[in-house]
Image (cartoon, rainbow, N blue to C red):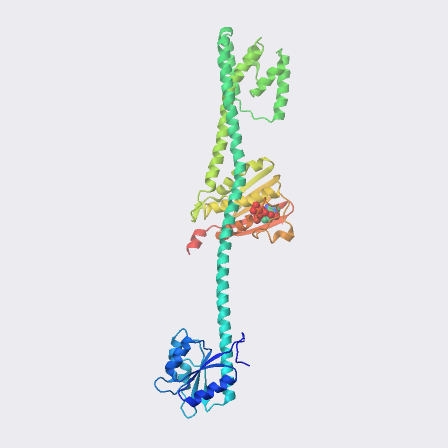
Amino acid sequence: MNESDNNGSKSNILVVDDTLANLQLLVGILTENGYKVRPAKDGLQALSAAKTAPIDLILLDINMPQMDGYEVCTKLKADPKTRDIPVIFISALSDVLDKVKAFGVGGVDYVTKPFQVEEVLARVATHLDLQRLQNNLRLTNEELARSNQELAHTLEQLQATQQELIHSEKMAALGQLIAGIAHEINTPLGAIRSSVSNISKYLREIFEDFPGMLDTLSAKEIKLILELALRAINSKSILSSKDTRKLKRALTRELEELGVSDADTIADTLSDMKIHQGIDPFLPILTHPDSQKLLEFAYNLSGLQRGNSTIETAADRAAKIVFSLKSYARYDQIDELFKVSLTAGIDTVLTLYQNHFKQGVKVVENYAELPPIYCYPDELNQVWTNLIHNAIQAMDNKGTLSIDVTQEGGFAKVMITDSGKGIPAEIKHRIFEPFFTTKPPGEGSGLGLDIVRKIVQKHHGEIEVDSVPGKTTFTVSLNMNLQTNSNS
Ligand SMILES: Nc1ncnc2c1ncn2[C@@H]1O[C@H](COP(=O)(O)OP(=O)(O)OP(=O)(O)O)[C@@H](O)[C@H]1O
Ligand SMILES: [Mg+2]
C-alpha cells in the first residue's frame, strides 16, 4: 500500500549488499511488494546508481569490503544530488552495530539480518512516507517563499503608488490654492492698470485745461484751486458708502444755502474728493461761473495722488501674496528640522486663502507668544492647508474660522475651529483613513487628513478632533523640543 507515491508511480529503492544471497532476498521481497528495486553489490556501484537514477530510498549494508556502509552514507550526504535520499542501514545481528555512528553519518533507521520481512517492509514504507511528507513540506515552503517575495514586491509597488498619490494630492491642494492666488494677484493688477489709465487721463486733461485757466483766472483763484486739490490729497477720511451719502446730502444743502448753482453736481465732485466740510474758503471757486470746470481741474490734480495711493496699496497686496507663495514651500526637498515661527507658517497659508475668506469667512486669530520651534516647516504648511481647506469646505465658504495657538507644557497647540456642519458621529472614527471622503468625486480624494496625521506623527505630535454641528475643532499638539528629543 506504500509502494507507490501519490502520483501512482512506483517508489525506487536502491539495495546495497555485498552478500549476493541477502541482495537477492531483499530485491525479491521488495519487488513482490510493488517497489522498483535496483541492486548494487558494493559502495562504488551504489554511489553511481544514486547519482544517475531517481532513488527514493536506500537500504545500505554496513559491513562491506573496500568501502563500508558508513563511508558510502557519508559520501551520499556530502553530495547535494543525493543528500536528501533516506538511508536505512542493514546490519547483521552478529555485528556490533554502532548506532551513534549510523545516525551520525546521516542514516535514518536500521534493519537487522536475518530479516523479518514484515519489519523491513514496515520501515521502508514509513521512511518513504516520511520522505514524501518532507518533500511536500519543502515544496510548500518554496511556494510560500515565492508568494512572500511576490507580496513584498506588491507592497513595494503599493508604497510607491501611495507616494505618488500623496504627491498628486499635494499638487491638487496646490492647484486649488493657485487658482485662488491667480485671482488674488489679478485683482491688484487690475487696480494698478486702471489707476495708470486714470492718471494718464488726468494728466492729459490738466495739460489741456491749464493754459486757458492761466489766461482767465486770477492768481488768487489759481491758488485756491491748488489748495482745494491739496485738501483732497491730504484727506484721510475713510467712510462707508452710507455715511458718504449722508454727508453728501448735507453738503448739497449747505451749497444750496450758500447760493451755489448746480449744488448737486458740485457736491458729487467734492464728495469724490473726500471733502465734505469746511468749504467756505473755496466759495470763490464754487460760485464762479465756470465752477464745474475749475472743480474738475482740482479733481484731476488730486486724482494723480489717488491713483498713486491705489497703486501703492495694490502693489503691497501683490507683494504680500508673492512673499507668502515663496515661503509656502521654501524648505521642500530638505528633510531637516528648521527652527521657525509656527504662527508665521499659519499666516502664510491664511494669506494664500484670502480669496476664499472674502466670500464670507471671518477669520479670528488668537495667538499666544510662542518661541520659534524646531519642525519641518513645509510639511506643517501642508497640515494647515489641509485643515483650513476642510474647514472652509465644511462651512461652504460662509462662517467663522478661528485659529488659536497656545502653549501647554512642552507642547505648542494649534486649534483650528470652524462653524460648519460638523462631523457626524458615525463617520468620526473614519475621517483619518486614507481615501475616506464624503465629498463628490473629483472634489476630495480623502487623503488630506491621512497626510495631516502622518506629518503630525513625524513631529512626534498628536491630532484630535472635537465636533458638534456648528463647531468642529482640530487640535494639533506639537512637541516644542523635537530637536533635543530626536537627538537623544
Ligand atoms: N472641518 C470639518 N468639518 C466637517 N467634516 C470634516 C472636516 N474635516 C474633515 N471632514 C470630513 O472628513 C473627511 C475626510 O477629510 P480629508 O481631508 O481626509 O479628505 P477630503 O477633504 O474629503 O478630500 P481631500 O482632502 O483629499 O480633498 C471629509 O470628506 C469630511 O467628511
Ligand atoms: Mg481635505
